[in-house]
Amino acid sequence: GLSREQVRVSRRLALVLRHRPESAGLALDANGWVPVADLLAALGLTRDELDLVVAGNDKARFAIARRDDGTDWIRASQGHSRGVDVDLGLEPAEPPSVLFHGTPRDNLASILREGLRPRSRHHVHLSPDVPTALNVGGRRSSDVVVLRVAAGELAAGGHVFHRSANGVWLTSFVPAERLSEE
Ligand code: HQG
Image (cartoon, rainbow, N blue to C red; front, side):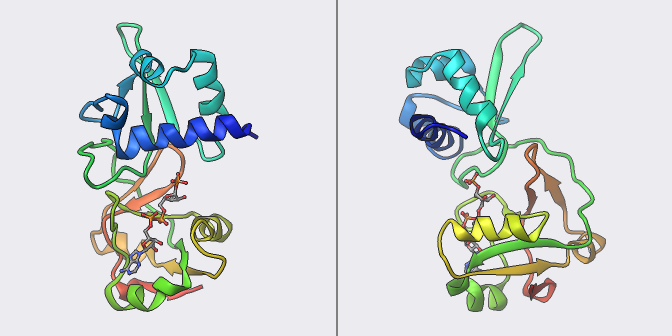
């Protein structure tokens, strides 16, 4: 696992690469990437420190890619704020027949009324299994409800799904009729 200091760096990376790049004086490119060199300078990190946080991140939240000119770039694999205008360029993907979504029970009545909405993010985030969904919901509450999402039926009806580089399923909206309590 990551040390306390590394977790702090990881949180800062998520803030900068998903939500508020300007807070570090950075701008993301159209696909969400920033030059690693710029990020290191902005956050006062060494490359080794960054690599350890990226490699040790429990959810593989960040991806590094080398371009033809030899420069390394980094982005968050998912989770961007709606106000951050990036297109991850993910291809549509065929989801499994069932996906899951964990949420604090306080949200349940509203979700069953109006469906799952992306709220402050670009997409609704769905989990491939119940334990993952419990973890996601558990970030905010100890009383979590897991919803089953009829992803196969949605896809058959024309809903588009994407799978992020770190295995999170993304879609724009899930109508209440395709949700049930697990
Ligand atoms: C809820 C983490 C009431 C929704 C996770 C959720 C994930 C509604 C909250 C990623 C609603 C939004 C995303 C409705 C949705 N009425 N509540 N109609 N529709 N909600 O954080 O899925 O650790 O934006 O159930 O692992 O919790 O940051 O979404 O509770 O992958 O890498 O509104 O964030 O990844 O919360 O989590 P979020 P999420 P990281």
